[in-house]
Image (tube, rainbow, N blue to C red; front, side, top):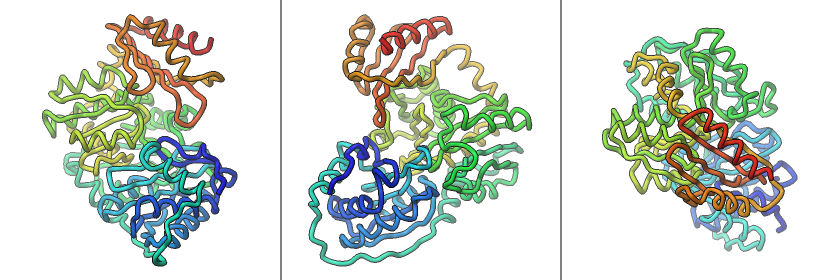
Length: 448
């Protein structure tokens, strides 16, 4: 069948419903998934998007017509889905477009935890099977069973911290009408010292309040304002499907993902000394510096959950963090979760008897980061990356993911987006003035 090839991304399948991704395409992908993996059982969950029921139904029919049984885990967050795949030991499909706007839908596909299908390992194979109608001949008709693992999930994540160590803390959490609200309430109801103030906890695919991506300042503005105004100890923001997570400190300031990776990595090394910790190519020097100082081994990896999970399992790393708000834990099947880091941060604040703002002050004095700056381009991304490598050839150049260039007092990474015609710049320097000077210089080259 004819299908838009652009929906088959580096880490997942994603497109606008119903133009790019619809019931017909979903049915074909379901058949292709069972054909490619040769599995007899597939776990299927979905988020709260308005097109979710149609996509869930189509994918499930495709799987069952291809001979695979479907375990329906219902409407869940993505970390609940990963929990199901890991504990039941099956392949899985999660119907979600994560933090994309409401008109999108998509699929996150697990081969066997922690291995996910990615662009060069499975996703393009699915595309070829769909385009060529190259489905295997089914030998049976699959059936559907339903299972609710939410109580098991709640009990499991609570084992990852020392609940008795938590001091009285006020938390404001904004789940943006995404998938995290219901399970967050159930987890936090087991934390007697924590006062949870919820914002937009009810899943609603019409997204009546704000968008699903807390990296966009407008989607977290109200939370930041409320944390400061209501004297909360911390604010938590979750993306639409709950695999990305963001922290607001007691001042109402947004904490960059690499600062959060550095603080959590340092803290987790107290529990698991001399361990490996992964971070992505965009991150601040704060991450390797704090990890090394705490006796750990920092390891850099390319961006993307499919790559990070695989490398974590290979290196037996205890923790990984991405600038984009993905946090991964060995104790959670090497998978990313929004709920788990929220609990670890509460434990960290409690045990250190310190405000988050105080923990951050040392980092803010030493590391000056640009944050991720996206630039839409019309020409070839590769040509721009090669030009940057030529201009800054006096630095140490690496091509792990885009181009990374390191000097003694500043460094940067520029990489193409996997989903849009964008170049993404992350830059850091040892002074604010140098950071701003080099940022503007590189943006000038990108814009030229």
